Image (cartoon, rainbow, N blue to C red; front, side):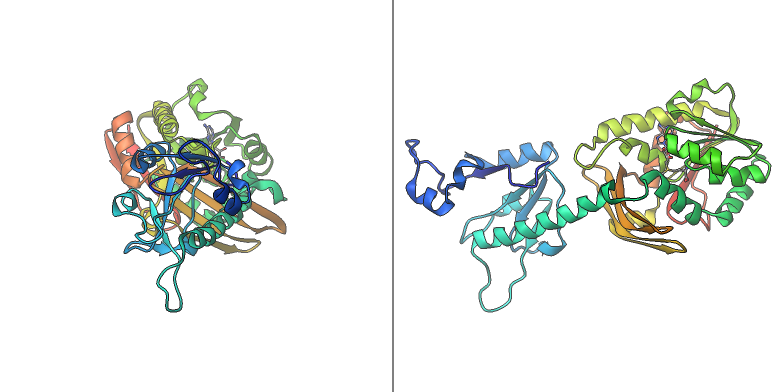
Length: 387
Ligand SMILES: C[S@@+](CC[C@H](N)C(=O)[O-])C[C@H]1O[C@@H](n2cnc3c(N)ncnc32)[C@H](O)[C@@H]1O
C-alpha cells in the first residue's frame, strides 16, 4: 500500500478540476499548482454508497471532524487501506456519514476560534496520522533486526513461560496420568524439554525450520522427538497421544503466519483454524486431552495497548492492537534481546476464549470442555477438551 493519497473523491458543491463541459478550470489549476494532474480524482453523487462499498472492501473509515465521540487525532492509529472523510467548510460532515466512520479524529483547538479551515485541518491530521502509520509499520518489519522473529519468540517464550509454568503445567497434566504428548507448533522446544525431564514422552512438530533446528540443538532430550512438519499433516504420525497441545497463541497465529496487516484474510484464517482443530483432535487418544489457548480476557479488555517487557537480557517496547472488525490482532515491538537489536511484529487472528470454546465444541465434539486457571500462564487463556 502506498504512502501517498491514491485517489480523491469529490462530492456536493466541491469544485472539480474540470468544469461541467469537461474544460480544465484555470483557477483550480492555479491553486493546485498542477497537482490535479498527478492525483486521480472522481466526482461522486452519493458518498454513502462509496463509504459502504469501501467499508465492505475493509477500508478503515476515518472522519476528520469535531464530534461528541471524537478522539484526539494524535491518538488515532490508521489501518490501511484508509478512507478519510472531510466535510463542508461551514456545516462539517453530516451525522449520517459520521455514523459510518470507524473513528472520528478531532484536532484540539486553542485560542478563540472553534475550528480550523477544512483544508488546514485535513493537512495537519493527514500529516500526523500517516507519519504515525509509517513509524509503526517501519518498526514492524525485520529489516533493521539483528535477530529474526523466530529467534525473538524462542527467547521470549523461554523467559516468560519458564520452569515455574512448566511445573504447573506438568502437575495439571499429571492429574490426567499423561504419559505421551504431541505439541503442535513446539517452537524452540523448551516446554517439551521441561516435560520430558519430568518423564513425559513427547513429540514436537513445527513447520518453521529455524524453530526445529533450535529445538534439536538446544532442547534435545531422549524422551523428545522434534519433527519439521505442518500440523495439518500430523495424521502422518502413526500414533495417538494422551495430550495434544497447541499453546502460545499458536492456533491464532497460524492464521496470520504468512499474512500481513494489508492482506489479512479473516475467512481464510477461520478455515485454517477449524481444519487445524479437527486434525489435532484426531491425534488425541480416546479419553485424552486437547490443550489449546488463546489471548486472555484481560488482554482483550485492554483492547489494544502498550507492550513493555523488561526481563534480564530482553528489553522490548511496542504495541498490541485489536481490530475486531477484521478479527485481527497485531503486535509490534522493538528493542534489544541479549545484545542484539530486534524490530518486528506479527498478525494473528483475534479470538476470545469463549469463541475458542465454541469452535472446539462445534468442530471436535468433545465429551467435556473447560478453561483451567493457571497461576503462571501470564498472557493466554488455556482451553481443555476431553475426547
Ligand atoms: C507463537 S509460537 C509458539 C511456540 C511454542 N508453542 C511456545 O509456546 O513457545 C507458534 C509456533 O507455531 C508454529 N506453527 C504455526 N503454524 C504451524 C503449522 N501449521 N504447523 C506447525 N507449526 C506451526 C510456528 O512456527 C511457531 O513456532
